[in-house]
Length: 557
Image (tube, rainbow, N blue to C red; front, side, top):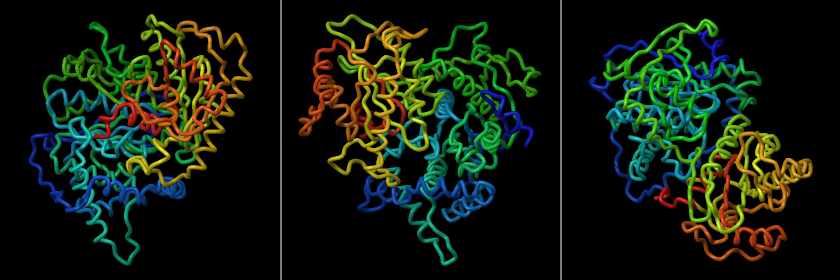
């Protein structure tokens, strides 16, 4: 196992395939120990989410994980105890036919591609996004999906209260407690998938792998890692080798190197992906291999014509087969949707570009995608074009490094705000965060503004007026890189950016003093007269979720 983990550091994307027999196939008899979820009179969805948030100890969880970094087995044993108290045994999870995916970035997109491909074969799919990976966008029920759709509010409420009461009832005087937010949702996902009798479950690993609560799964059908990079270094380690050891902790079967998508396209038409951006090609290549391996393990037909299977000497790892993707696979890739990742919304004169990039490498990919999307969306207008950046970052990210990568996009205005949809009302329990205060997040936004202003002072006039290689059409910012504003919530930021011109987002009158700042006042005039407004929202998936809640109200229904 240590040898396999050492190889991880060199690979862009890998997969591991279990040697499980056909007895675990989708047509096998399921002797499930999961119990039905009863009705809870008087309990609504928001009540369940509010109670779930009392377990929201993300910051303390990370600190605990750091302190227990040397003993991952202790964490897995604790998870096994929670599983047993919930009414399940580890053996029950074998029946879920799990595809387990980890990685520094791209694992969510890889899971989305994989789930959609297999659903295209007519299989009933489950999909779980660990809270330790990326935040949900609008509602927490997005994390547990059946056939690509978030479970209903009713189903979430039923399963939540049954699991919560079961864990409460099994407390004792020996120190037994409630699981944290991360672990609770993982337990709940397993119960939902067993109760709904899914044919397979795609499970996205949270932070790391070896220490992740999803690693309680002992017999996954196939595992994959989307990429490796330096992220969450305080928890996972400060070298790629240490992070590779963490990611490799989920592998419980032989390891293969995943060939690039170009190899699978040889002799056939180029594959069309539902998710934009060149960086999605490696995620799609891994998803194709994961899907094919899963189908092969289940003795499924229509696996795609095998082209070649060879050993990659340079990597010293077996190379996964190169094959011709089937029509089911091609359609699955083409129809994949993953909100908040390289997503474009056209609302009248405003075009919103949403990407939850929050690491150096993912922001670099976001910039490439944004430039290409700008070129595709160029059209004649009756007024000037305005570019706006809406940005926030959280945690231990380096905002100065991320903002520097965004500077060449030649924004006219940079807007910063916390990941709070509103400040005048409690808002949705789905987006509450008890680990930070309003003062803390506003201070951070002001720091972002200072970083941006400093970058604007350093930038030469030539940089602000000259397009970068492979960049968008020439664009001269109206006021330069230093024009920036800080708003107290997402709603106020969108209200200023849209100036009432977004046909979907039509808020009430702005608060008093909304245009008191000179930049806010002069910028409002520029935005009102613009023929096209291009807005890039990035830096945090929490921020993207707050924006989507306001621009796509149907997601909250």
